[in-house]
Image 1 (cartoon, rainbow, N blue to C red):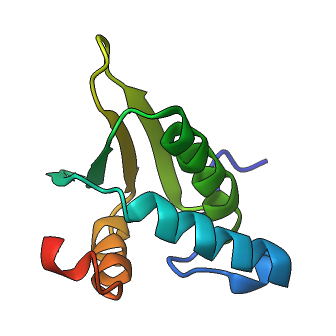
Image 2 (cartoon, rainbow, N blue to C red):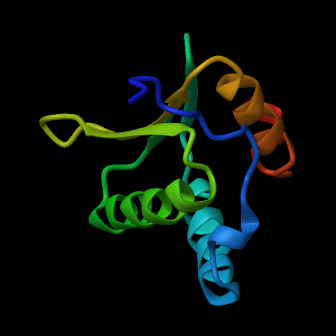
Amino acid sequence: MSTQTEQSPLYCDLTALTDTERQEHVEVSESLFSSLEEVKELPDGYAFRFPPTADLLRKAATFIARERKCCPFYDFTIKVEREGGPLWLHLTGREGVKAFIQAEMAGHEALAPLF
């Protein structure tokens, strides 16, 4: 038995979501990222800062639940800072993931200036 885990390719598998899930994912993603306040570059990806609202926390969790189906190569972290601090969503992963995130986000008109 091999101890090495096969890694998924670095591309979005759009067949992993139903048409309804894909449409809902687009809507949640657009709503979430329209509230983006800051992007920080990380060694292996990016951190996205949002206002610390319950609605955006739910949207971040919903985004992750869907995104991990079509892009299983991402590592996701949600961080909510103490004392009413911001909400952070980290998208990270193995070599190549950072460039993939850049390409994906640069394709969104509102996010392109941040990359």
